Length: 406
Image (cartoon, rainbow, N blue to C red; front, side):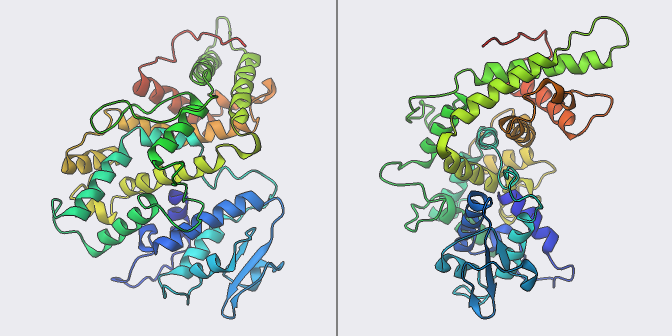
């Protein structure tokens, strides 16, 4: 959600910002404001089938009244948060004017849609996004950055903006939060956030991360009693069939072996197994927190002018190179295929979100997955996934596909 929030902030940022002012970047906000923003998005997604409006204005915090959004620039529709949480976003609240009004406007930008009954995959990415980003070792690398910042001066002088980023990072992802924010899953029952994320990845995809503990031992975590052990094989079969469809669609002669029914059946198998793990809300909160954690660090290396990137002298032209230079500063190595892991994260998230909603579970709806004559965003996504999956895993999906059977 943090990448989407950053994009929304750019849209609502006034064009005449005064040079030298605190920028309205994500890490410039108070940690409690960011935690509250996460709660707003969570509550909105959970309640949007029965939207209510909550108004924040000069008179204070409005109750749960149905107020039209045009009555105030600070109306958050579709939320039903407690007043004490909403006060955190109030521009004249406890933390002063830290751009809270800008944050609320950005949240409104994120929540502006026409169809309030449609599931909101755009509010946060699919769990596969967290898995791909975390496989780069980005969280371990920035954990070491945080340790070095907090325990000495190994990394040199850190700027005021860099310390602001570090404070937000520690508060959001490395502190056992006492207050009941949606992000505070760490407890005596789940003391290790890393183990909680790995548990979610394994249950949903039957895949572990490609790195273990700091001493390269297997990472200890509970894998649960149910998982989608056929996920990888089914996904690879689907991608192989999509590639077959793409190649056949470009042929001008010879047999056409594309089978839309097989593609739809494989998509349906994925839909059923993924939805099985989500019965009655299972793994939804874990997904939200995992992808939000991944997005925070992904945003850090995706932004060439991120304060901590500049402080660490890790400027570069790509996310993977920035991550490599940060990793060098703390004596760690990122995954050698980080470029492809970064490239897989968003398109694979979009594809699995659509598959879960049943978009391609009918043979009449699958052509956009491989159409070379009118290649839309979906075809571009699938081709990118096929190429980068091969690089990241070593599995050539362009070879003759092996059809999956139920």
